[in-house]
Length: 257
Image 1 (cartoon, rainbow, N blue to C red):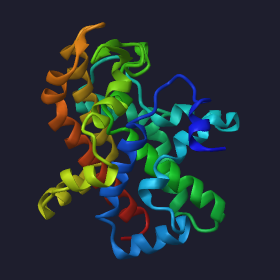
Image 2 (image 1 turned 45 degrees about the vertical axis):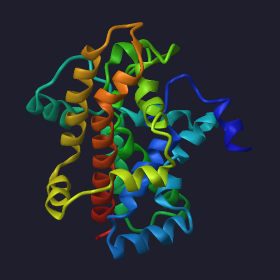
Image 3 (image 1 turned 60 degrees about the horizontal axis):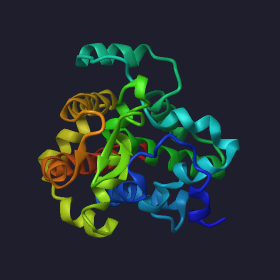
């Protein structure tokens, strides 16, 4: 089945970053892999790049046998948290969400003896979900399904806030994923070292703080367009870039880089 056909059967919950955003983050991550990690990833994915592998977890939503993966893509929260509160909550959480699944996938990929097909699936999922949680509305509110129930108008088109941050803002820049990655992928060694020291809880907390502000920036049914794009583009690019750097650090750690 072609990719267009796949999207006709996707469930209503929106996908993080959309196809373009995921590939941007994957392309950035690829630029910071160690030689050792790159070789091990190549042995698993073959000629499939990180950028292309990053969309698999959304493509397979069209197959109902993978419906159990639905909750793996996000961490919905029902109130504002301080960092210590969120850290304690996530450490004690046993539900199926992006936090627990990233930890699961990381542990699985470090194991010896898992099959090649498991390695491929786990790596594709890890890439995608680690990227997901940098889209702020993947750490959104429980009561509106991470912004899916928050309706606004984007250049007079009815959408929701989740979709706006998934794809509309990114696609409005009218760049390919490689062009976009080249346009924003500027980090210093010190910046990368600092980001690589951050643990998964910090990634989620940063998205949580951002999304709490995004919820207050607009009201339901607001008409958004050029000004919203202008005001939020730097934040969007920051999250795409941080997602790529964080993902590279995680993959380097998993594969012994």
